[in-house]
Image 1 (cartoon, rainbow, N blue to C red):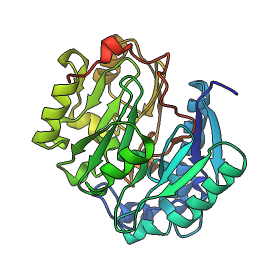
Image 2 (image 1 turned 90 degrees about the vertical axis):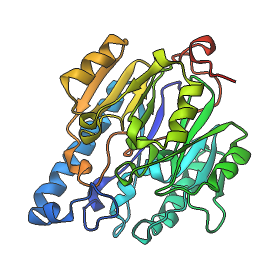
Image 3 (image 1 turned 180 degrees about the vertical axis):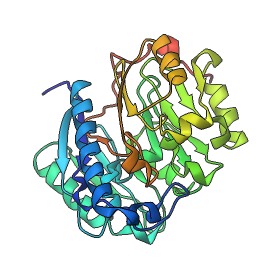
Image 4 (image 1 turned 45 degrees about the vertical axis):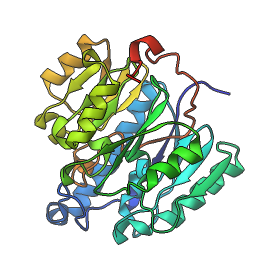
Length: 299
């Protein structure tokens, strides 16, 4: 079996910005030039695919479904670890219709042996996939956001299903409606995050568990560029076009950046991480991640 990361992306042919369920969404801007916006979105998606391949990934290209434009953000579809899948339950009706076509996609992946087990969140328990449940390979646990989209009740379900620790992080802002908009664990043990996006309790928990030397506070400018919403593969980070200051900070830590113009998807409040879902992630220690001594959390 290949050791290259296996990443799902969804064909963008049905993508559009036709409603607003987060503060970033701009359906009016899309409506002024729908054909041009769609072509730019297709181009951007293909550029992201190429960037991920350059970073060493294999791509699983999944179909979208007409009428469900945000399927292009598969990070929200499920949490995947050790071949086990926990399907999302979406809070907003505009996305709830994605659940059935994504289930069909995962059933197909199971038939092909790419995953082995599928489960669904209990009725009435909202949880929006890997966007709100981010695996930290350096530490061996999930960081799980809750508040705007995912329910606090989902935390115990995730912990029991995957058998791994789940660290809750309350989200304080509708602009950061998913944790992946404001929080990025890196392979060296660093955490790139926007402090104001987390509740005071969440910030306290983060500071208790992660040494100050590994915390990298992000800025409002990083948020606006959707640079925290990035894909980290070893020492490479694939992200939307960034600023000189963040590029310098990450390069100083030993990371190489591959930047892609993802502005068509930022119109929906998404970036590189949202547009991907890692399918082969395991709970075994990632050799590219920080050593346990580097990333050890406080007890």
